Length: 160
Image 1 (cartoon, rainbow, N blue to C red):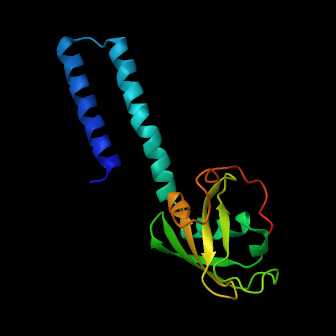
Image 2 (tube, one colour):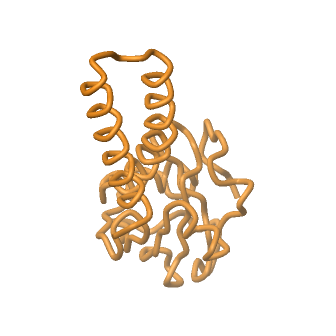
Image 3 (cartoon, rainbow, N blue to C red):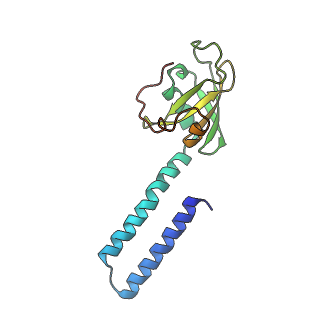
């Protein structure tokens, strides 16, 4: 069981116990409701963020590539899941521009629909038609982007 699942199970148990105690007492104290709501929010908000990262689709990753790098515009990436929510293998329908003579090892950030840097990709071949993309912390771990760059607003694709 993951840490998020464990926390949700504990929250459920705490809510159940609290509701049962309130029903036995025949009252519903306001402070207790506020405390339970605060605990629920403290657990559910990070859980929603965790879920959002893990609900990224192959199409989302493909769209995030040209959103992060101008040189990838018009290349029509297609991505397949390697590790859900973390790693994707992407192939471009057409090679990127000739700004770089050998793309192998070149890295670019990826940018999600909300215009935030959500990861990055590394070219696997010299033509730049095959890429491995990583979402979130995995892109930092792969040294594609820095920790401070992850989540930053990026309103236009990167150049260079």
